Every structure is written in C-alpha cells, then in structure tokens.
Image (cartoon, rainbow, N blue to C red):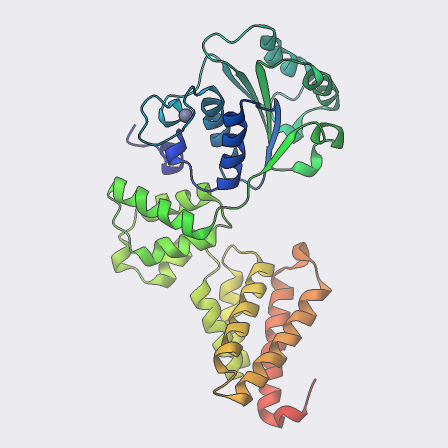
Length: 352
Ligand SMILES: [Zn+2]
C-alpha cells in the first residue's frame, strides 16, 4: 500500500479524522440524541470538501449505539476505521443515471437491515440523474420507511430539481478553512515523514480554494522534491500556483510606475495556471492593506493607493467572474501602472 496517493490514504474513515463542518456534525448529533433521524439528505458543496467521505462516517453515526460519541470510546463505531458494508450502498450517478440503475440500487430497501439499524443509500453526482430517475426517487422518498436513509451527493445543487430539494434535508459543505487544511497537512506530513518547510504548507493551505483533496495532491507533488534547496518561486511554479509573493511584487512594480517591468511580470503570471479574477481580487486586497498601512504615515501614497483601488474596482465591475482572460488581465494591470506613472508626472490634479 506504499504507493497510495495521500488523498486516498488519508480519506477520513472515522469521526476523529474528519475535519471542518462542525455545524453539520452537531445537527446530526442532535438528531441522534433525540432519536429522530430524518430519512432524506442532500450533501452539496464544492469538490474536495468531504461530502462522500462524510456519507460513510454518517452511516456509522446513525448506526452507533453510543449516545456520547467520543474519540476515546472504543465502543463508538464512529471511531472505527472499518469501511461501511452490508447495509451501506453507494452508486455513482455519473455512470448509473438511468431509472433501472436506481431501481436496482433501491430495491434493497425492501429488506430489513442485516446488521445495523439503518440502511444508507448514497447517490453520488446526483445532479447527473435522468429525469425519470428523479421522478422515481420523488416517489421513493415519500415512502414511510424508517429503516432506510437516502443521501444525495452533488457539486451542482442548482441542477437538482426543486421538488426533490424541498423534500430533503440539505447540508451545504463549505470550503474548508485554510487553518484546518494547514493543521491536517502538518499532521499528515509528520505521519508520513515528509520533510517540508511549514511556509509551503501555509501556501498550499490557502491556494486550493478550500479543497482538502487538491491540497493533498499538492503535498504529494512536493514530496518528490527537496524543498529546502528550492526557492519559493520554484515551488510555486511546481505547484502551478497563482503566486502571492509575485502578486506583491507586481503591486510594488505598479507603484513604481515602471510599465515595462509590470508587463513582463504580468506575462509571467499569465503563464501560470490561475484564475484572473481571483488574482485581481488579491491585488485589490494587497492595495487595501497597503493603504491601511500608509494611511497615517504617508498621506501621498495613501491617496494614490485609494485612487488605484477605485480604478481597479471600476474595472472589476465591467466584467463577471468568467469573463476574465489573459488579455483583460494585462489590460487592467497596464491601466493601473499607467495611472501611477501619470500621477507621478502630473501630480494628484490629473485624473485620467
Ligand atoms: Zn459513535
């Protein structure tokens, strides 16, 4: 098993390994404590946030006989690493979207659970189901049967029909917080003996948009290198990341008013695999922070920064998230630096 990818090896199997989503956990714990567990769920949210992993832990939770789920309690099956079986069924709707596939899965609901109290049926990528499957499921979930639970898992909540949504308890799996990802990365690197500078773990934890899976893939990529002899720039380019340090450099070049240097650096950024809208927002953040920093000590630069921010925000309003491409990005960055160089030449009275 030595060649497993980290995201596979560290898929959380038990409650104690599961990070984030504390509000969902406490809602489920509440249902268990009052002994009234709803039967239909939709787990939705961005990729890599633990929806599928949690469905397996959820199976253990609802079937756990203990009232208090604690990490040290060996009777608590939530802490057990066992992979749920016998009464746990999952299907991937991306490849099993037809009515007959769903019917085959759910025909097992007519039998009482073999070992546990509840049978749990998970339908992953539920938004891919056919219209007939959805209609069939609508009838199934209206059935009064307290022995089985259906969990729909989806990254695209909007594509699930309203009629189904309104009959399910919907749990949104938010992006995992950088701090939680960071702690998990530290834990895994220690356990795996991966010698990696904490600075890079911090970069990873903030760079993958709250996806633990993508963060672990990044850690897997870096473990092949000796990061102690690499520069931050090289590490960022290995990970193909929108480089925060480089963005700071870009802002300082913009403030220096050197158009040629700004254009060269923007071209370099364009070659990395990144979202331009996010980058522009990050530049906006950097400018805002600088403005706060200089607001008392240097009135002139603070004035320039707030003007730059206005220019940037005006530009951001014209486009939407998906409209940003490399050309737009370079255009906006150039506009900012031109503003600074004009400002420096003519002073604060000239507003383009
Ligand atoms: Zn338990």
